[in-house]
Length: 238
Image (cartoon, helix red, strand yellow):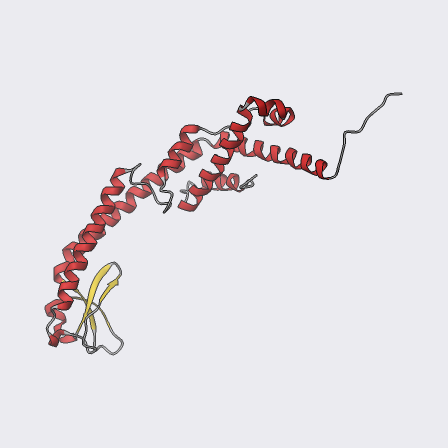
C-alpha cells in the first residue's frame, strides 16, 4: 500500500491524545484517502471485477471512503502552499488581507521615520535600520534620541545604539498582533473541526486500510508466482 499502515498508527495516536493533525499529517490523510478512493473505484468497475474475481472477493466491501470527507479535505487546503484555503474559509482571507495591509502601513511609517531622522538621532554607524523584536518593530537610534523617538526594547553590546519602537507604530503593531492572534485562533478551530471529521470516520478508514493491506498481500503473491513461473498443481485422486 502506498502509505503502508502508518496512517492507522497516526489515527490511533490522535484518538488517544485528542490532538490535532498538523498540516503535513492532513496531507498524509488526504493522500491515503485518495488512494483508497482509487482502489474502491477499481472494484466498482465491472470489467475489473470480472477479470479479477479473487481480488474482488478479497476486497469484499472492505474498501470505502466517504466522498464528502475527501471532498471537504481537498477543498480545505491550498495545493501550492498547503495552508488552509481562503476560498473554503473566507474569514481567513479577510484576516490575511488585513494583516498584509497593516504590515504595509507599519513598514511605510517606519521607512518614513528612518529616512527623516535628524543626524543627531542616528546611531554611531550613521544609518537607522528596522528590526523586529518579539513581534514589535524597532528602529536603531542613538541613546540620546531614545526618549524622543519611542520605547526602548534593546541595546547594542557597546550601548552606542539602542533599538526603540517608535510611538507612531505602537497602536498599529498592537492591531497587527491582535489580527495575527485572531487568525491563529480561527485556523486552530478549523483544524480541530477537520480532525474531528476524520476521526469520526475511524472505523471505515481502519477497515479500508486493512482491506488495502490484504489486497496488497494477494497482489504480491500473484506477482511472485508470475515472476517465478509458478502454476497451480494438478492433484489427482487415487
